[in-house]
Length: 461
Image 1 (tube, one colour):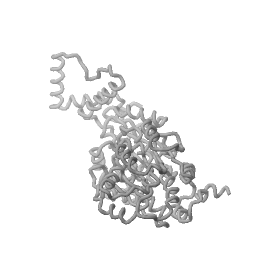
Image 2 (cartoon, one colour):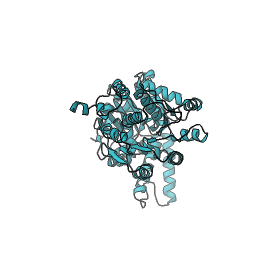
Image 3 (tube, helix red, strand yellow):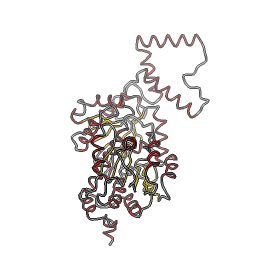
Image 4 (cartoon, one colour):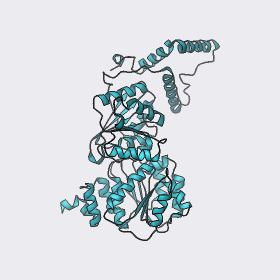
């Protein structure tokens, strides 16, 4: 009896599902699966709070597939919404794997390509739709989707859905689908905005929380390096690849421009050209999908990405996640590092932060309720001199942060109006640009302020 209780047999799923589970290599249900599957099978609305990599997708798919059971009619009976195309594709793939011994029909709806093939699949008959809210509403308003048979609706990554501005579409969808239905909402974090929405979306929900909200998986080792500038971030990154410390990794950046710069710095120098790809919003849909498939199949070892990909990658054996930049949406830290340490595998998350990013990392540490281990820059890493423009931009950003915390703070750039002082400052800046000496001096001064100098020997330890 005890042996059955620790397997998927305990949920009394049909044989088709159990065979698919075995094929997928699942043996023991994860905590979120232990709690969610029975509640969903019993028809309860569920509010699930679980970090990424905990088996959340299977936690809601298995009972849903058990309830849908087989192909029936032409109209969909279950809707699953996710915030990104990558995540929609990932969920739809999971549906295919778990429903492979059934005749259940499913389709993924997302933008970035023409809707013709998606419409044809819907018109042929579909039981489960996995979609981004925008594409679903587009096809619904065209009259291509009938909704009167909807019995189950699931919102996955609800916090990200809100961050990306999908709530108007979600509310429009709620107005047109049947009110008598079962609802499931899953989120890795549970900020106040998600809590407020759960009250209008869920009816007497059962809350399932497998770990405190916004915590990180215990299987992920986290550490940080404080650096003076972007070039030093690249230098540390190159060092890790040269020493072989980093293997299969995802490098997250704040913007597509930085992603391209990191890609160009690593490609062909420390990472073979064929083993590294970059994905962001400017890359075509097929390029992004092909890059992820190559990464999943180990043809590509390094993926440089913006947060557009943070929640669409469910790939085991990612050894490292690198936060090249600290995310400005603090909950995204949890989602980024959740790309490693999945399915009980051990992973490592490394974060680089410049002085202005210290402000954001403190906010993140408060959310995850832990301090991230700080380490010294390895001695063999060159600490680059900070360019004048970058140094000024960082100082201005720090000023803005202080003003945000204290509206009365005037800032380091604030000075009394003094024509002579202004003229002297202008002259100094002009001579610095022509000779280069002023720029170097300013960079070195900034380095000393934050514990760095031109050489690694000047780093305060």
